[in-house]
Length: 434
Image (cartoon, rainbow, N blue to C red; front, side, top):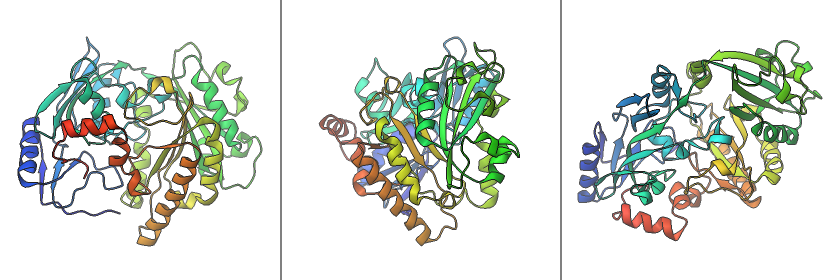
């Protein structure tokens, strides 16, 4: 969707190489585009006429079982990290659905997943960062040391420096996870049931989705009698789904007692339960990504859009958004509707709407066939939905394709006088995010 040609490129393997690259960029007047796994879709990792700096070679990884921490290079993928930590019976407290992202990339953006309702984003679960600033200085920072840089770098979209390493907290991993899924035709009820589940004892993951109302696809999860799992079947293009997870052996087991599900609008008998090991649950998108890759969908442009919505207006905005976004437009890309909890979201750069339980709404389509007209149509629809969200008091999560220049990460992150002061302090030459 966006093409830029740099003047030079470097795949760094040490913090010292990153520092030298920054000093070279200062000397030559180049901007720097920092690339992890290049998953951002709005050109955030690209640079025109400057230095394309890849952090993928920053791949050191170690785990300390005693302190329950992992020391990782910014280029380490989350799936690599999870496979390593599970050997020690540990796992990061928050994982995105897709694990093929770099640690440095998601810490620069936010990083949300099923456990975010109680654990926050990945940016809320960092003990320490090593950052190369726009002056070439290599700085270790944390909540107790160089706090200004620590706060600026988390969800800073690379505006203040290059994250080259992180120390991450880990939590005990359950060997077996039970997931429960249910279908809804009422969006408001699905959102309300999510809120109830975020307060349920033992629940570790809760997410909602809009899914195509296609019986053949739904039958893969709910069986041939899928219509029996719908409160009021109809022919609308979208229906809704909740996925709940908890460790097996916890104080309640939905498949057996259904106690925490009994207060919800969907009867316990309409929930479908499955057990899997910790790795299968954590990397649950991997089979879908393989299928999409084989079909050519994963290589297509991804005009993503994510916004945070105030709880009271979320259903109105989502309904209006899906009025013109058909399942065919998504081409197997998920539509996520996730209730979060403000008390868990502590990253200063994260701009959230008013209220205690904002809703993260993400449209993650595959633009296939990838014609210019197809991509333009999805971007125009993103613009419409973005304006709907803003009028309702929503705020952007700008890791995807920004609908307007004013919603690019640079403008989002540098919106306050304090953030602009931090930019002048840590990137005085304006190298990053030009």
